[in-house]
Image: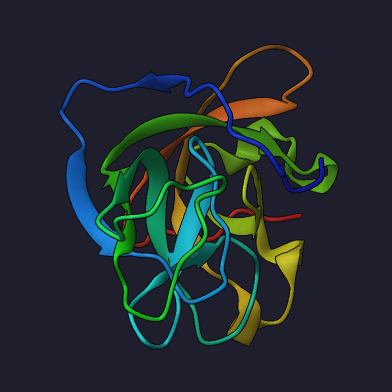
Length: 161
């Protein structure tokens, strides 16, 4: 899969309610509803990629605009008045990189590949691996998609591939 450049429909499931937060989007960064996001070093949201110095934030569920101007895209500004409501601590259906499509990865920590895809340890060097949570269940026999429990804490071990 490749990173999305448009809003996505959310496919969520959980036995517990997710945690929601409102966070400013980084200046000139564009994020998408339904897309995964990270925190940059300044604590603002950026589109999820496997980039050193970032940490996993969650999935965008709503745009929040305190800028006073209409938004054509969900792109942050220097004032921090363009924000997103994000959710984590629940399960979200995401794409799984081919090398990580194995049942031995169930309950192991998945890492951010891009704003809609997870992968195991093959995602990059240790410095670039951004944990997003354990793989809960694959959605079909191809294992191309799985529900990942979006969390900010690590699983027992890392998924491979």
